[in-house]
Structures are given as structure tokens and as C-alpha cells.
Length: 455
Image 1 (cartoon, one colour):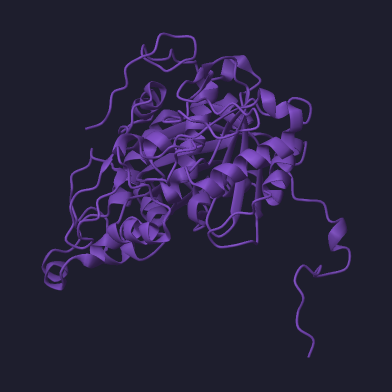
Image 2 (image 1 turned 30 degrees about the vertical axis):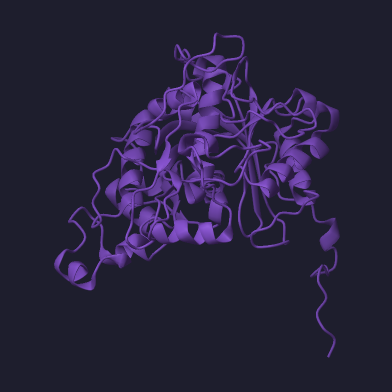
């Protein structure tokens, strides 16, 4: 019997099929509400101000009997009560979902809840409950706040609980695509609106740190041991030695631009294009030539209509690992050629940590806020840049300028590559009002501001 051969086209004419794309006559999907909670704070503006100042939310994890003396830097959420009998990622999601929905200022009295979609994802963070002693699990059930004992095992738990809590009766989806889950959830939500399955969507992702997950990533050799917890993660720096875990969530409210304008909503950004691909290379490794990433970047700019202009800013996946950083730099340089000299690129993971499942959603939300305020944030702890091929990675200082076009990238384990192109709403009267940068924002040309660290 002949062995099946890889890379064989599955049906005649497959090579001629055009890639999926947003049709030119499709109405833009816009972001009208944002909620964020992470190690830097319990609200979108608090987190955004922490990003501007370069403040780190990373500290050492607490001692644990289960993982012995292993203490690693981690971006922990400390604004919730420490309760092992309540599921942390769901509690964070409830908090930021309420913020996003309030921010969107929705017409709840006239809104058809059967047309409100929910596309959320959470993955690792609540498996720690199974470590509790059996007698404790029997005598101390999960708190009566809507969380059930089986919620820790079901990937769909967060979308189920959030849709129930806010009475969202439209289509509900859950995605588990590792570090790309947040972007995938947003893309799925946009598609449901474009396909007329919903008028509004709440989308995003959450994750909380579990000791078993920290230990597993540490065994993979991808976590930074420090020595200074606050600056342990150093994306694009020659002294990098891995990423740090983080926890938090971000939720977005999406709707059609015409819907937002008709109800007088203010718009953070438009989803100009999105693209998903798979490297089909290795479960944890990246293609050194970045061939698939190059294709993704070219497709994104084509679908967004940016062939002549290109993006002004890229919010990179930027983990602080050698493979990831080099792959992104190689891909951006190859995709944009000489135009890459004019692109700004940075990573938020140096101050937030890697939120894994929620990384894409929180970084997409921050990219939308960057468009609102015209501020490309810095890559913190980048003091000895790798040869970047003249790509400006905003080493420790951000740029304040007229920002109209930005990309968000996620390069996930399993080979998932995802990108979303955002642009400012072309109708100035319907944009969110830009907020002034904080006094000690790290902006090139300003007097250096002292960094404030989280204890």
C-alpha cells in the first residue's frame, strides 16, 4: 500500500482557491467597549497607565509545598481575595466583562439579547483546585457565586458563566488555541456579526497562574529565572533568557460601525482585517525562516488595504525567547522589506508577563487604546537590542504620534499564527476622545521618568 504523502492537494483545483478575506463591501466591525484586569491593575485605564510608565507587575511567586523551592517571576493579580475555593480566572473575567459592557454604554432596554454573542476562552488557571486535599474538597465546596466544581475542567466554563451572568443568549463559542486564543475569540465574534448571527458580541480571554502550569513551562526551559523579577522578561534583548507567566483578562465589545454610529457610541478602533494560519512545523518550535508568518503579514496588509502604507505599529507576541523574537524580526523584515525601517514594534510582556490564553486579547485591547491615544508603548527591559534589521523595537521608550494603523500578532504553541489589523475610525466625530498621557509616561524626547515597581 502506498504511504500517504504530505503536502498533497486534497482536491482538484485546490491551488487556485483564493484565501479567505473580508469582502470589500462588508461593513467594518468596531470595538466600542474594553475591559482589562491584570497584574498592573483592575481596570483598563490603570493597566494602560502602567504600560505608559513602564511599571512592572511581575514579582516572585509565593512558596509552595507542591513545587518545593521553585520560585519564579510572575505577573500576578493581587486585587482579588485569595480564595482557593473560587475559580480565579472566572472571577477576573466577570470583573472585566462588566467593565467592557459598561464602557460600551449599550441600550439594554431595547437590546435583543438573542442577538448578543459570547466568544470567550480560558484554559489553565483553575486546575489548581484539584490539588486541594480530598477532605477539603468534600467539606469546602466552591463558593456559591455561580462556580461549580466541574467548571475547573471544562474549557467552555468561562463563556458559559459569563453568558449566564449577563443574560447573553446569542451564539456562544469557546476556543482553545493556546496563546492565540484571545485573538481567535475576537475573530470568531467578528465573523458572527458579519454573518448576521448577532448584532453585538462580548469577546476575549482569561487566564490565571496554576502551579502545575508554571512547573510544566519551567521543565520546557522557556521560563526566565530572574535574577531581578521585575525585569526578568526582556523581549528582543540579547540578554533574554525566557518569558514569565502572567494572569489577567481582557474583554471587548464588538458591533457593526453603522450600529455604533446609529446609537451614538464612540469607537476605539476598526477591525480592518484578520488572518489565521498554521506553521505545521513543531508543537513548540517556530520555523526559523518565518515563511508562514511572512505570508500572514502580507495577507493582513492586503486585506486591510494597506499595501501602499503598511502598518505604523506592530504589537508583537514578543515573549523574550530566542525562537519567538528572531522569528518575528525575520518575518517583519522579509514581509515589508525597506518599509520595515519605518515600522515601530514593541512587546507588553516585559511588564505584564505572558498571559498565555489571554495574551492576545489583552494585547489587542492595549493596541486599540494605543490607537485612541496615539501612543506606541515601549518594550521594557530592552537595553541591549538584538540585531533587528533596523526595526525600531521602542527600547524602553514609547512614541507619541498620529497613529492610524496597527497590527497585533500572536505566535502560539501548536503552530497557531494569528494577526489582527486595527485602524482608527475614519469618521473623526465618532472616535473615542484621546486621553492625555500620564505625567511620567515614557515618551522619547521627554525627561526620563523614574520607574515605579510593584513590590
